[in-house]
Length: 120
Image (cartoon, rainbow, N blue to C red; front, side, top):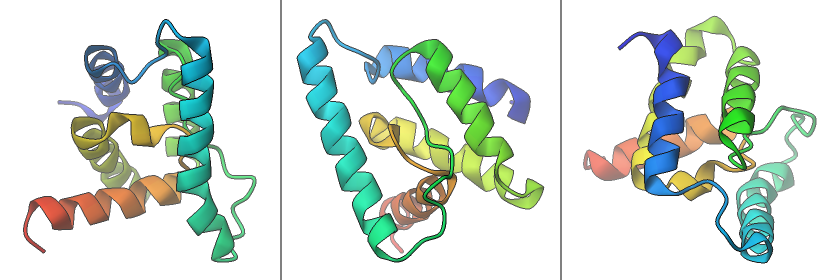
């Protein structure tokens, strides 16, 4: 699969796995707040300088595609393949976790999931 087709494939996975918005907007808002708080807090507490870094928005297909492109392009070219692989792995295991993540958080979570699924 071409790297350029990956974001479209991720959108399809998001639709199939249901990580998009539900029919209950208040549940979505609570979930979004919990996900953003849980994912962002440890990273920001570490004194990271990427507070203005772009984040992923899984609210709609269009916002997911746009934010994937924006977050991916914020990385050096040498990290983009790892980012794509990390996004795919997270989508396969914990798709709801992507919302609100920065590129660095995606890479760290991808490494962690890779170690967990491959025994270290």
